[in-house]
Length: 407
Image 1 (cartoon, one colour):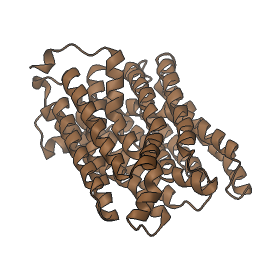
Image 2 (cartoon, helix red, strand yellow):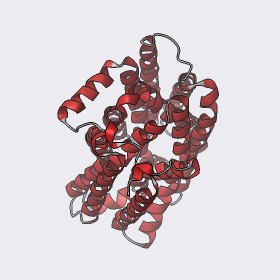
Image 3 (spheres, one colour):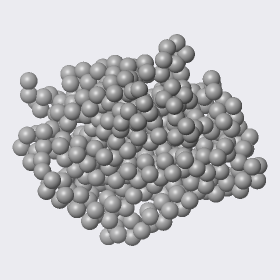
């Protein structure tokens, strides 16, 4: 069947399908959080902070493969690129199920990240094939609002599996869900890149795309800003289980607290999807980034004053404010970085995703490893990274010749 002849999916199906595809990343991260202590005990991990590497390894795998999957989808089409990603992801799940050492577990996690990067990065290019400007930002926000339901329920899924079975069954659940999304995508989503628009896959093509992306001050600048903000969030993800269990003694109810904060991101993504068409991506991004940074700068002195252990309700309010801002930034920053790259959407999305994810993995792992039984390292990270991102955004915008009504 020629999938290119199919009509585009209605938004009511397209948005949840894209969210489900991208959510393999969130599912692979958040469902594992309650299992980290058991994985550490079963696989003889010496340091409690080293358990975080189960999360960091996934981001490392993502950063390594996005640069391949984007250009590959420009060559063989969006659908076949996603199929290859799903196969790789499922192979990584099988390796983790059978892992007999922590090193093999981490190798499986890297492979999962490499595979999940395919759907993540190609879905962005697939959306860019059909939408641009504020409309793309709007679609991305709606996708994120559905996507965020996954991190809201994923820890509960992981904890539920642990309560009735073994942590290895979590990876079996990943295999089942990835099979479901594969079938849905294969049967319903048309190919969005016609054969006549495809480019030959070669290292030269990849390098040309990388060079063009890096020459664009707008694309490169917003990619770096994305990596910085994503890095702060990864720092939270890698240490979230320890923050709640070590500082506040919350274990059984950890999925509930995690879900509340995850829903803050989802709520702001929905709001952004409505506001971005009126106010534009850049003004909303500046406001959100300023709010996140100001919240950290105000909360940090208090956190230090109370010995790094603020009252739980104050800590929840701080993180909720921060994540409301991050929800606005996630959709807009990616769209801003991709805006000059519509003619090379595949490789452009790959460079943006690969560079920003590599930065986020390095930054987030560093912040997570600084965990010392207090919230001071994570709040300090949010404050410093927020200031750096604001400076980088200002530098980026100085390279824009004139305002664009579409942004």
